Every structure is written in C-alpha cells, then in structure tokens.
Image 1 (cartoon, helix red, strand yellow):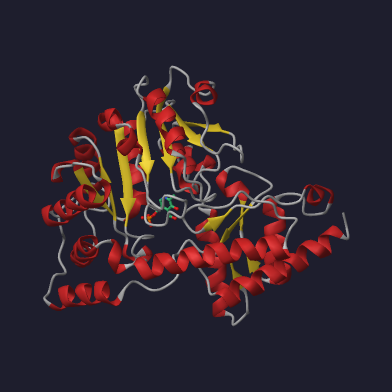
Image 2: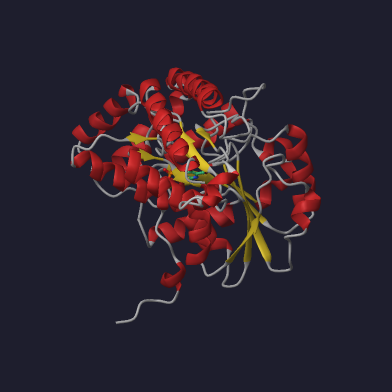
Amino acid sequence: MRLAQRMGALRPSLTIGLNAKARALRAQGIRFYNLAAGEPGPPTPPAIVQEAMATLATGHVYYSVAGGTAELRQAIAAKYKRENQLDYSQDEVVCGCGAKELLLHSFMAMLNRGDEVILLAPYWVSYLEQSKICEAKAVIVPYDAQQPLPSPEQLERFATPRTRAIVLNFPNNPTGHVPSRAAYEALGAYLQRKDWWIISDEIYEYTVFNAERRHYSILNLCPQLREQTLIVNGLSKSFAMTGWRVGYALGNKDIVANIKKLQSHSTTCLPSFTEKAAIFAITQGRPLVQPMIDAIETKLQKTQQLLRDTLPELTFTPSQGAFYIFPQLPTWLARTSYPTALAFSEWLLEKHKVIVVPGESFGVDGHLRLSCTASEAHVQQALAWLAKGLQELKATA
Ligand SMILES: Cc1ncc(COP(=O)(O)O)c(C=O)c1O
C-alpha cells in the first residue's frame, strides 16, 4: 500500500515527541529534568475548572456548532475591544480545537500548491509542517539575533511573485522577542504594499515583559492591514488551558467562513463543555491569571540570571516575553561527537536526563530552547546538569 507523497516530507512535532519521552521516563520512574515544556506551569485556575464541571453536570455533552457558539465568539469580540482596542463582530471570529488547528485551517484556506509562505526563523515547529500539508513552499528568513524582526529591505529579498502569506509570532516562541513599535510600524508599512495574507500568531500575548509591558498586535499599529490579517490566539498559554484545546482567530468574514467550513468537515466543533469554560475565562480576562503571569516573569528573570551566572558559555539575547530563552551553544561543540544542537540534546537526555528543545525544531541550529516554567529548584538542577554535560564535552573538543 502506498502513502500519499506529501507524507514523505512531513515530520512529527519534535516538541510533542519530547513530551512523550518525558512521560515515558516518568512512567518508568526515572528522574529527569524537563526544560522543554510548552506549558505555563500551574494547572488551569480552579474557577475555570469548576465552570466546566458545572456545565458537564447539566448534561452539556453534545455536539456544538462549527466555529464556536455565538456566545463564545461574542465573548472573544468583546475581549478584543476591551483588552486589545480592536473592533471585530462575532462573525469575524472563528474558534477551533487549539490555535494549532486554526493555523492549519488558515494555511489550507490561503495557500495553493506551490504558493510561498514566508516564515521568520526561528519559527514555531508546526508552521513549516503545516505548509507542507498544503503542498506550499515555506521560504525561511534566517535568524539574526541582533535583529529578530527583519527590516522591510531584508524581507524584500525573500518576496517573490508566488508569495501569498507571511507568519508573524510575537511574543515569539522560542526567542521571547517582542518587536519595538518602530520595527512593527516599518514592517506594517511594507506589508501594506503587498497583497499577502498576514497570520499573526499572538498566543503569548499575556506574557510580555518588556519595558512597556503591553502587547501590541500589528493591527494596533497598522490598522490598514485589517483586511489581510488573521489574528490567531487561544487559551492554552494565557489561561493555562493547553489540554482543553481552545483556540480562536479573528479576521475578515470570508477567511473566517472558510476556516469554519474546513472545521465542519474535520473536528466539527470545540468540545462543547470547554466552550462554556472558555467564555468564563475570556470574560474574567487577565485578572484571573495575573498571579501566574507574575510568577512566569519572576521565573524568566531568575532563569536568565542563573544562565549568566552558571553557564556563561551559553550566550543569549534577553527574552522579553513568552516563557522561553533561546541561548546559543558554544562554537567548540562543533568539534565534539555531538556537533549539532539536535545531537547534543539527544546526548544530554540520554546521559544526564535533561530535556531541552534543539534549535533545529525552529529552523536554527546551534541553539537550545529552554522553558523556565518549572519550579525554581527544578530549573536550577536542570541547568546544573546542563553545565556538567557541557563541561564533559568541552574536555573532548
Ligand atoms: C507559537 C505557538 N503558536 C501556536 C501554538 C498552539 O497552541 P494551541 O495549544 O492553542 O494549539 C503554540 C503551542 O505551543 C505556540 O507555541
């Protein structure tokens, strides 16, 4: 039996694979240190859990509607007005089973075979694979740690007549980068001259730790881009609801209706009881999770300080958001038996039971993504083993 050709190029998600490894180690009772988690840390706030349980108890267990109930879409539109100063009507909102599903469906709705989509490295793992599912071509803009958001001149070098879309993700996974207003405005002015879709993945919007401490959507700075922009967001990171699978997108009615159509033939709808809990979470908004956000900021700052103090060989641009740090591995690693970030991370897991995400997952070798949301003691231990591992390898370089 033959599989479809597109499956040949498709790779499974490395981050999900690492999670599975962590589970397997736990099941075997093996002690390990996990710096790979894409989770904000604490469990979902109890009030949200109670809302879901109460909903289940009333027998709310049937199919819901494709794209999310009107009540949920209304709550999202109201959130965008209240917290983001952006106006959307409920039929410009579509909900899905996680931001991941909405991203896939938006790619499917926007890209034909052979079309090009611009990704800025380091890019989130699934953008590349999702573009392959659509048989589109991802054009990767290389990473420049000094200037993570490329200038219009740099971007123009990657634009072709086949370019159909660009994906932005700020605060960024894995660098934690948040662009300055000026950089965003320059990008916006450039994109206004292009007939490209802009997918703006803003899933880490609550965790912004730069001086202004506020998240700007590209649409706040360049409202003229509204018709060509799809904002993608969700509750996974902002409300610690990764397992609930609630994502949403806001854009023009046409794109939203087409995403809904795709969902009606794939996952059908969100789990109906999570919709009720999502309405509760979104309506309560930021105050419900502010302690968690404050804790993430403290952990991020402490982890960065610990890195500077104990692992000076890992250089990094300070993270301003999300909950990741993206340090560069020392160049001498290339002279060891584990010369790439992938080889090194596999060795580190095998030898010292520390799980980190290699930069290759995000299209950038020579880097690691470190997540800082575990307990301080856990992060401290993990970094101590990471330092020991590097020392051991340095002796062989
Ligand atoms: C940048 C980015 N976008 C989207 C997602 C997907 O989130 P969800 O859990 O809503 O599918 C993630 C999850 O890690 C992410 O890091």
